[in-house]
Image (cartoon, rainbow, N blue to C red):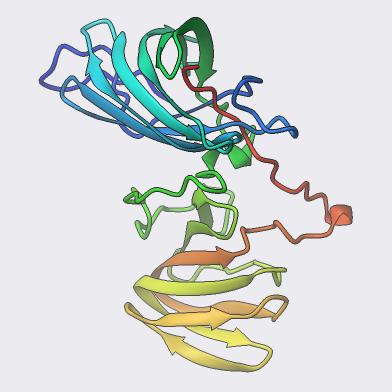
Length: 267
């Protein structure tokens, strides 16, 4: 991330699209996994949905001042059936790598009074793939920005791959191959669906071949050899992988299964 001044407003930090997590013991499961919060912002209005760990579902809503301080109300349903509500003041700190950390000074108002401080922060980029997960029970609607947009490969690379979204059941990414380029992928251990956005090519698999163009939707089962060949125009593919990409790859191949990430929420 992520400190991005908002054009046309006086709000220092744009929280729109940010994800926060922590492993606070009061909301974490026995394995240390806690809630993950997805934040949105429109002007000085900020809201968020969160779930995971001990929290079935929760919500925040409030305002952001010119220094990025959030004044919020919150409510959450715990797995025990208990409903908790209150308010909090979240004070941001910008870390050296540009990520935002929030110190949440919360005041529980229902069912009993209480106060405390929780610390949540953005996950390090690429350091924990599971931090992009929505949580076991916390899936929320979201527009996947950048999905299906062609990205040129770096000078030394034959193609470009970016992963946009990971949940416990699937992942979504965009695969870009330039005209005349090379598809150097190996068979995967997960099922895949390719949705062609731009370009023209021939998909060759161990069970057959097919010409693909914008609008083509192709299913490739796990472990089937496949390669896009004769790439006549820049090829852009939205790739849906189930279960998530590389989640079934054997440990000897260097894959560590994604672990649930945690996010603290006000007490």
